[in-house]
Length: 276
Image 1: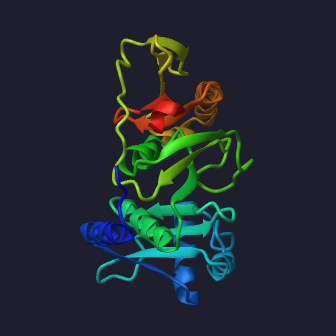
Image 2: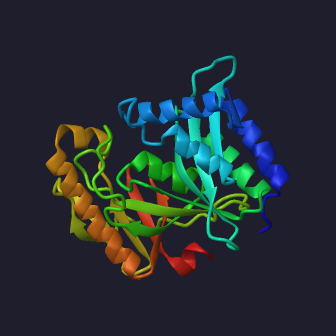
């Protein structure tokens, strides 16, 4: 299968922006970067005096060759999304997305703009991390973008004190995105309901299932971990530890996360099959 050209991806990014009703551009100026800093502060519910990504840090990343993208509604001035990316280790043609956040319906346009920028600068892959318990983000990353979960990181950042993550442990799933791939090679989910249950969730129902051939593992996450964390932090933490156990066991056996269903079940596939 041949990959998409840089021109194809650039056109896809433009189409995605039009569909979302936004314009997405890189920002380098003081006011533009300050607006991105404020936007991230609103998303992560931090005080203005302690934004998660200070403007001076973003300026330095741009100066070092990274990119800050901002999405503006057509005809408007308030940001609808933003992202930050830098290059990975020398010689690996890899980029790393430090952060991306967007209003509903805008995230795809922001990621496609990042993708076009990275390809134009010679990259072939992009990596980033996200909270594996946030099912909607998992579906976006794995199903819509076609990235693959390659690494489970236990308490990656240590304690976090923002308004979204406070009181939880900061486990993260690393995903890798083949930037030139035209579409995901669909990985069949198989008979999840017919597979044997191997772990129970805090709600007493099956948390994980495994097929008899040992080719698939499925793992469930809560419906809305953000709401659960706010309403019942100890219960949210029990979910964290339960999902962690499934993922760390599966990844140690050579599995990768390849899909997320609409009802909140990950599909984990052996890496040789995920990359075939």
